[in-house]
Length: 486
Ligand SMILES: Cc1cc2nc3c(=O)[nH]c(=O)nc-3n(C[C@H](O)[C@H](O)[C@H](O)COP(=O)(O)OP(=O)(O)OC[C@H]3O[C@@H](n4cnc5c(N)ncnc54)[C@H](O)[C@@H]3O)c2cc1C
Image (cartoon, rainbow, N blue to C red):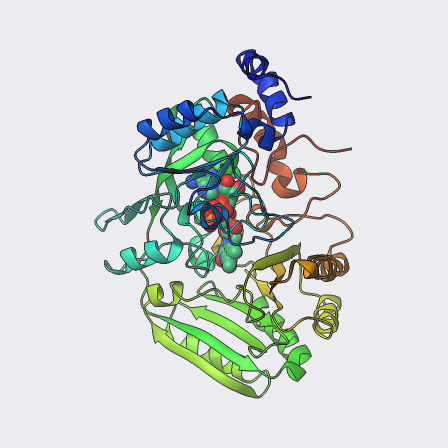
């Protein structure tokens, strides 16, 4: 039986363990206990908007990118922040009513962590981006997407190090580590973070940088969602010339030759080069998306190597400003299929592209639905691998490792089990037998040992940091730091 509201609040007042007990009630039960006067008080204290079940925009506001019958949530309240301080009010409110919290910036989490049955702190309307061209720094609010930051920096001839999808938030990708077109040259996104303004689990604001809070600053760079709400941040910008970027398409029947050749090219890739290989039974077929940000003769030579892997069926490659490429829809987005209602994804991290992996990908293609897009992203090389694993909380920097993924979309809820069964079989075949590592930004499953797979040699230090800054695991809708299992 649910406790009365008086008992419930007494438990909350009794401390952190009781807050946990509030969650144990089930967020829906907690939500039903929200008094309307308290909701009105919260609305009066924030500059943004509250969205509640039944409101006109509720269904649209609760959704995130990888929304499907397994990941979907029904938030009790969504705080659409209109000011950075609204996040403080939201944390206070969630604590008072023992609501589970989800923090959302771009909504691209693979496990829909940006939604919750409790309270969602939605930062996506905080869009300010300020470029300091003299210091080559961007200061941006949490709702700024990667594409938006790239466009703003591009106006000053500068580039940020951000992910390959324009709709992923610049801060979301950075807090998990962050791999992008320019990581071979300039490291992971988190290697370029300079400071973050953080709202902590006890609703305090901290300006976190290497001088003010070195430990926390270390933890933010790879395990960042665990320690609070980053409402704005500063990051380093760089100067490069134009890039050669675009897609080279091949016939699917040439997949084996193209995959093997892709591996060879990437094994010798200069820091300035990154490429992603995508494989789909649908009309997009087999294609390599590329970005070269160095000398034109080297770019031309790499393009020729790609063109020689097999007869090309289409090429859309051009010299362009980096911002133009950065604003292009990610190749990782699921392809055309039924009217888009649900999206799902599986990812796995492998230390090499082996012949076995190539064979599995080709075999899996034979049973894939037309909307499936599978691929290899973020071939690890260059500067991102030269930064020691312990320098930031983001540990997985092994040269030649690669991220494999498969994304799909469907509209009929009846299809959900079949779609997941297919994706899980894909994953089962590709999971490594030992030394399994997970990348926080691409986590789609749990391993037997839990979060040590995410944080490797940094796990013990992160556990201590989490115990200090968020002892009740208030922020847990994320690649969560937890004790080793088993
Ligand atoms: C199409 C696509 C392309 C991608 N491409 C890349 C890529 O090229 N490189 C790469 O490294 N990753 C990539 N990703 C993964 C992406 O970086 C992660 O999913 C990232 O966490 C998304 O951040 P978000 O703010 O958009 O998502 P959200 O779902 O809003 O947030 C994701 C996680 O970060 C937390 N979080 C978000 N904002 C904050 C904040 N302000 N303060 C504290 N915690 C916060 C959330 O609580 C959640 O746990 C891609 C994902 C997709 C779907």
